[in-house]
Image (cartoon, rainbow, N blue to C red; front, top):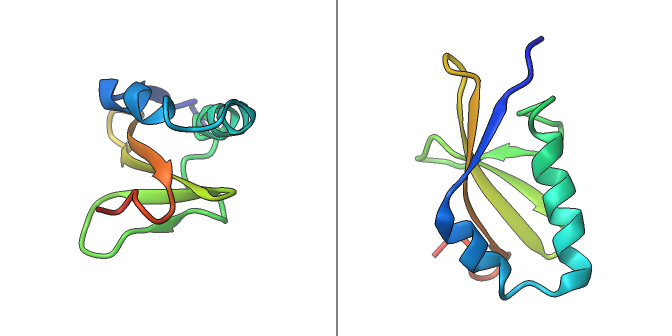
Length: 85
Protein backbone atom coordinates (compact mmCIF):
# COMPACT_ATOMS: atom_id res chain seq x y z
CA UNK A 1 0.00 0.00 0.00
CA UNK A 2 1.41 3.37 -1.02
CA UNK A 3 1.84 6.15 1.49
CA UNK A 4 -0.53 9.11 1.25
CA UNK A 5 0.67 12.70 0.97
CA UNK A 6 -0.59 14.99 3.72
CA UNK A 7 -1.71 18.51 2.80
CA UNK A 8 -2.50 20.92 5.63
CA UNK A 9 -4.58 24.04 5.02
CA UNK A 10 -3.13 27.36 6.18
CA UNK A 11 -6.04 27.82 8.57
CA UNK A 12 -4.92 24.74 10.53
CA UNK A 13 -1.76 26.59 11.62
CA UNK A 14 -4.02 29.31 12.98
CA UNK A 15 -6.16 26.69 14.74
CA UNK A 16 -3.08 25.19 16.42
CA UNK A 17 -2.18 28.53 18.05
CA UNK A 18 -5.08 28.02 20.48
CA UNK A 19 -3.97 24.51 21.44
CA UNK A 20 -1.72 24.05 24.52
CA UNK A 21 1.87 23.09 23.66
CA UNK A 22 1.61 19.74 25.47
CA UNK A 23 -1.17 18.63 23.09
CA UNK A 24 0.33 19.91 19.84
CA UNK A 25 2.89 17.10 19.60
CA UNK A 26 0.19 14.42 20.00
CA UNK A 27 -1.98 16.07 17.35
CA UNK A 28 0.91 16.35 14.89
CA UNK A 29 1.90 12.70 15.40
CA UNK A 30 -1.73 11.65 14.80
CA UNK A 31 -1.75 13.64 11.55
CA UNK A 32 1.52 12.01 10.45
CA UNK A 33 0.12 8.54 11.17
CA UNK A 34 -2.68 9.20 8.66
CA UNK A 35 -0.13 8.94 5.83
CA UNK A 36 0.17 5.19 6.43
CA UNK A 37 -3.44 4.47 7.40
CA UNK A 38 -5.96 7.15 6.34
CA UNK A 39 -8.87 5.29 7.92
CA UNK A 40 -7.71 4.06 11.33
CA UNK A 41 -10.27 2.19 13.46
CA UNK A 42 -10.84 5.21 15.74
CA UNK A 43 -11.72 7.57 12.86
CA UNK A 44 -15.32 8.19 11.87
CA UNK A 45 -16.91 9.51 8.70
CA UNK A 46 -18.96 12.67 9.23
CA UNK A 47 -22.56 12.37 8.17
CA UNK A 48 -23.60 14.49 5.22
CA UNK A 49 -19.99 15.33 4.29
CA UNK A 50 -17.05 13.66 2.61
CA UNK A 51 -14.85 14.27 5.66
CA UNK A 52 -13.55 12.17 8.50
CA UNK A 53 -12.75 13.02 12.08
CA UNK A 54 -10.03 11.68 14.32
CA UNK A 55 -10.13 12.05 18.09
CA UNK A 56 -7.02 13.12 19.94
CA UNK A 57 -7.93 13.76 23.57
CA UNK A 58 -10.28 16.76 23.72
CA UNK A 59 -9.30 17.77 20.20
CA UNK A 60 -10.61 16.69 16.82
CA UNK A 61 -8.81 16.53 13.49
CA UNK A 62 -11.10 16.96 10.48
CA UNK A 63 -9.74 15.74 7.16
CA UNK A 64 -10.76 14.60 3.71
CA UNK A 65 -9.30 11.74 1.68
CA UNK A 66 -8.69 11.74 -2.06
CA UNK A 67 -7.96 8.08 -2.80
CA UNK A 68 -7.32 8.51 -6.52
CA UNK A 69 -4.54 11.07 -5.85
CA UNK A 70 -3.31 9.50 -2.58
CA UNK A 71 -3.80 12.82 -0.76
CA UNK A 72 -5.12 13.60 2.72
CA UNK A 73 -6.18 17.21 3.28
CA UNK A 74 -6.35 18.29 6.93
CA UNK A 75 -9.14 20.85 7.03
CA UNK A 76 -9.49 21.83 10.68
CA UNK A 77 -8.13 21.10 14.15
CA UNK A 78 -9.87 22.27 17.29
CA UNK A 79 -11.48 21.55 20.60
CA UNK A 80 -14.31 19.06 20.40
CA UNK A 81 -16.94 21.63 21.41
CA UNK A 82 -15.96 24.15 18.69
CA UNK A 83 -14.59 22.19 15.72
CA UNK A 84 -17.88 21.30 14.02
CA UNK A 85 -19.20 24.89 13.87
